[in-house]
Length: 130
Length: 224
Image (cartoon, chains in turn orange, yellow):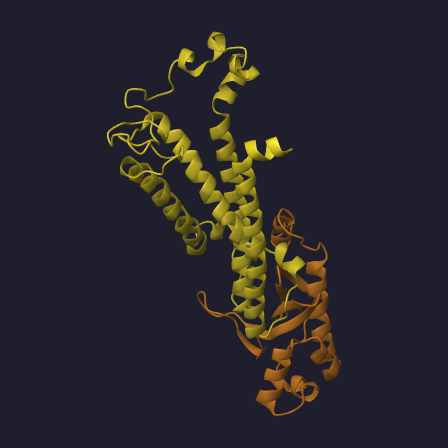
């Protein structure tokens, strides 16, 4: 069993884990990177949580669609691993790691451009909200 | 119907309390989670989502497992261990599994005994421990579900903090799993131990959990 599938299968025993949760989270993350790569800041911002949008605007002093394109968001290939734990998801690419949350049945980007830190410390993310 | 209610009033009362408490826990837990979600700048969840979440499952099952473990140990240990003066204990000279005659099993079963009490073999063995086995199975199932739900809730929290999730096997030796487990175990063991001791000296007139008010403190295995 893949590590990605394990949480979802386990949750099926006790909760309504959507069988498409992982693919939905993976697609949302992939769509975000694709929007940034296509210079479509508005589309990228629609895929972020309100708090992440607000943090990006605050740190750049610009509207989100312009500010997000100035962030150091890498280009990515296909997602290599998706893990979903209830309302949170981690989507791993060869080039980056993204964190997403589910808001009203849609996956939204919480943080991207994340670098793992030594020990048990949180990822250091260039773009992050709540 | 009225006769059934009167003759089952104890179980109906506690079933009602259980359902009311579970509904209250679900509503309060849902409000608590959404307050945290808003504070973290995340989306609110519906009541239905909360009821099927790992957060709710772990909060329910961590209490269930400890209750059934408490009864498992109490049923098992009171076969051999006694407490002088306690109505929770059997008489001091009756420790152990007792004779077939005392237990009305095999050829000593009477016409009103359950069928498996006189069946012999595996059926008699199973029925002779059916209360303990049931408590043990419910304990293991609840504890197992707690471990899975607790792991998912823990990793959800780790992702919220932008930390790497951990595996289920790593969660089984994680402090979160054992803190949830042991905080429930200690309270159950304290409650059952204090009941066994306090009932030596204290009384509740009319309750089968107490000795008769006038019974001597040193009388063991006497219920009022």
